[in-house]
Picture 1 (tube, rainbow, N blue to C red):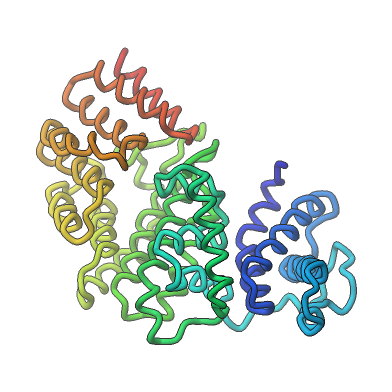
Picture 2: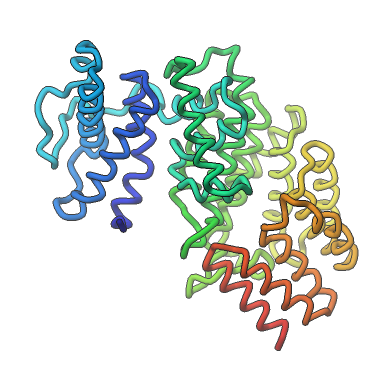
Length: 413
């Protein structure tokens, strides 16, 4: 079923808040999620025809609560829980009780985020479940982020829900001594949500601004809770500096505009200024971490008024540090781009050779795209065109596919 874009934009940020509130009330995450999904489906069906209710949060919470009661009755749930969740009067499908709508005293979406990062789950299960429950990503999108098949990811999410229920995890903010052990997974989740929003892994849209906005909002919330943590600050700075380029990444016809060709006057100056201030403060007082290093790289780009003014040698050194702190093939890929720009395309291509045998990168279009770009800079136009075509076959993002095929045609022309 297709969903009205305006309704979808409204439902996405509301969904985790409603799920968080319902899970807090009933204590059953899996049952609450099922009920919220039914309420979202009802809203997607009714709101375009009947209009958005005066209190959309309250409407969703009331409908989801009633669905949950129906589930509990069917399963012979206790009378006490029914009375706790039952709404006083049936909703008129347009207006929810005003008492249900006020904003919660705590950020239920953030508490939901922490619950999904419960220590009984593996890190990959924590991230997958949070992307599903808080970020609202589909199972296919999460699978793409993890470089695994969709059925594997579906099983992982299902097992994570079952594990949370079996362990009796409470829906409550973590104690102070628990925050550190969950923070790494929480930040990784927010990072992946932001990346999916900034460059959608599939579909006709290059960007999903609702995801980037939610990732930034939740990261700001985490920073308010942990103001002295350098990695939280680093992640927020990275998001702000990257999101500042958003308007310049899309051309008049919706086409992808690469960094080197962007009109930098369209970059968001306020976001850049805030991001530079946040990362400068973090680097001055906190132990160095991967998010701070990535933010420092983004800061170097942000400080260049023209693409040709970019301090590529400095970026190479920052990537060298990043590979020591958090080695992975994506970091190596980006490091190769920087080396190619600073020392020549042949040097960058040499760095890519080990990645061609890395199973994690075999299905990733970016390896082919980066290699094609460096081949194009080296003057090997036919090889570059073949690389762009290979990358286009692997990506499921239509804007990226069009851009890559355009580069292939340019290289072959």
